[in-house]
Image 1: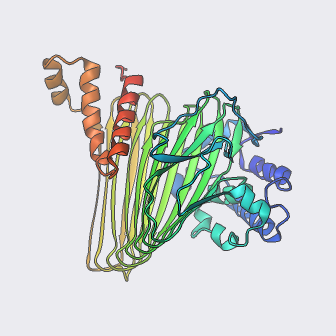
Image 2: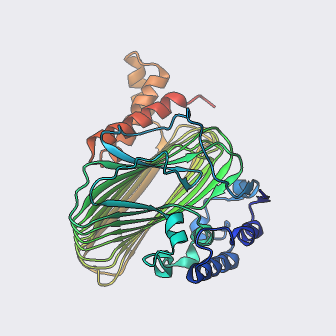
Image 3: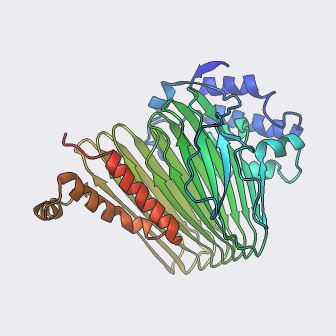
Length: 441
């Protein structure tokens, strides 16, 4: 296992060393796709401060690390796996260091749901997965997606048949085994058939505190009149580096509903790009992030309103302490033909330390006349008057602060329609505050 420093040349060398061992290496179209994308990555290189979409997120901490390609990972029989939802209410899929574990996943899936491991599909040469499904718009803006396409080794392909309403939540666990300096490039595909409804919650967690790099890309299609609730809980250890990119196509009358709870990783960047490509399509992009010490959380979104009568709502809230840094970049584009569009975007951050920092870049690009669009971004310290009031009623400093932070973040969580998951997120927020009480500088 060769360990390489994580600059551009190292990732290219990683590809050269492993391309013949990657799944599907006998498929000419796939080899061509991988080669095309590593060439694109070579041309673009790693983002820098001069890269507009990355101007607030430095990759220097990542570049200082040395990573190796992951080996097949196994957990001991007595290792306990975290589970967000009771097994009676969910079906769980487990990935260890980016590799699907059939032994640890639930074997019985609800009617109307199929799941295939990407590695298995590539090895079997499935014709339904071709170059077109692995091609992104604006590919030149997404170097890590190009790297993912070149090096993808596993992931999931989830398909929900039309006119199916899944009662059980699909829980997908992405678990780091604790191996140091590993990398994984997972590629995921979700297809929701017309008229169907489903809830997916993804959970990033780790065994141990070792450094690793996860580079994930997910492509989602929500067909006509379908609804997908897609929730994510990111609780990786504070040495991890996580970069993810999600591309969503929403059909006529369909809804993509997303929520992110981010508390983990040394550096976490979540990109979500949504195309509202048919009339009456809608998306909700909501989330909360919390950081302390030297954590860095970046949430970057783009919503393209391409047809009339489309809507999007976006509420992001963050709480930062210590030397933590938050980034929010949100772009709403209303194309010329997208009349009667409604697009609202809000970001608010609470800074619990003089050393914490948040950078924001809200953007509206409107080329239609009859629209209702808004954006607003604010940041500031905790309300000292409210803190004093709670202290005067007998609460300690930590109790009063926890109460105010919970109330501040609750607005974003309220957008979650599943009451059980809403409670889960609120408990996660409370637990984070208990583990990370803010201390004076």
